[in-house]
Image (cartoon, rainbow, N blue to C red; front, side, top):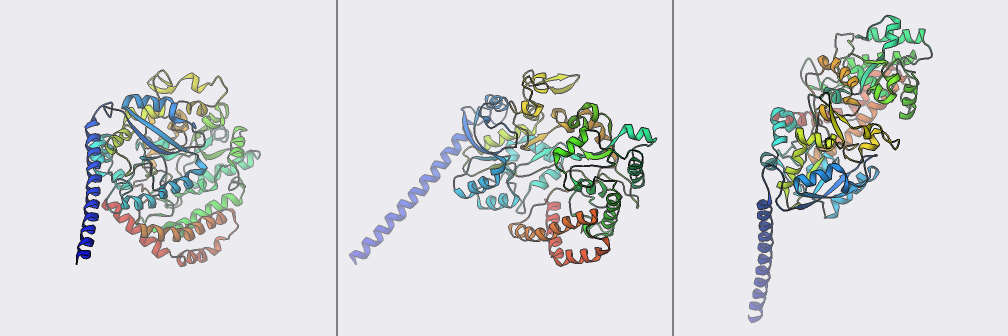
Length: 531
């Protein structure tokens, strides 16, 4: 009996110790939370009274500065906010591997920055509690982002997961910045148009006539070229009434209003027949599916293209050749369709900024990133500091001469990365037209984008979010269906596969699980509408 009593006493002591430890741990957390709250300035700058340090895991671009601990943008922002950032910078070719290792290590950073976190991982670790729910933090500490979401509710829809929570923040392209959302655009050599007495083509018939005229009268010039064959097909979608929501593979049936898999529609077959005709008659660069970027740029700089889908030619071919080009129009197709279908949703990748459960200052962290969703924050991030990296000329923000005309013989991009961190990463925040001095922000690009504005899609969808089960199933289905469709699209265009085999192609797609693929997409679409 006495032994039994000792056992009970020992167990009681263990339980009491455990409870004491738990309560102590909880008490410590509450104390840290209270101290962080007392240190926080809820508005204005600096963000905190006493300096804090945040550890941020950051994915780099190919040309990003390798050391962010001493560049203008982050030094300036540290002075403004009293928030010091310790950057763990990861090279592009190692991002996926190191991101995955970081997630399973058990030791997370305070923040994942520009990490392009896959939506499946965001949802998985969000539900586990490793990634912080951001809904309340946004409402209380992110007035700039909240304003954008209130003005454009589709932004909130796009970043909300199936459980109703927001676990990550996106890069946002200002909806008014049409140029960045519509590029690459169609361009025509104006000297050739004038030579032939033609206007910019506005129908599929006029486009064909222009290409044919170039072939006959200027055989040394390629009628149409690009660095990617798929861009040509995408350019034609709006002329054949498919891709009417800006998404690949799925759109909305204009008659029923239901989701459809448009690569198996009759309209899409007509598009491929038209594209095949252009390729077969050698009106399109014959190696368009294999040409590399450098070769395309070299061809363009040597004035070898009459038309192309590309970015502002003046910026990438040089002024002498580039200024010959004028922006094109969406083509009106055989059934009267005329839309610019290659337009991006304002929300880019949603996995750009994630606060983890290791972060002891989530409120300050939310305030830190929210600044970049404002006008002032966008200007700082993309232009830097006035009279150090940019100046205002005739009301426009322009990089200073030491950046645009490097004394070291460097490109503008190579000079920019010495001061700023935006090159090649798609950072969390908002990209605004006034503060973007890249090719899409050039006068030539803005003028070309204005031409297509009247033809933009009525509705543009973002990528949907899926449950973990849906995502796994959809990934497997898409690996078969989307891969097969893309491969066959290319073969139909270049003539490796005859369009007489269209019915066989459609049957194959259906047998690969198309019904279930569309069921998942439809469920995700309905949730998107309900968010």
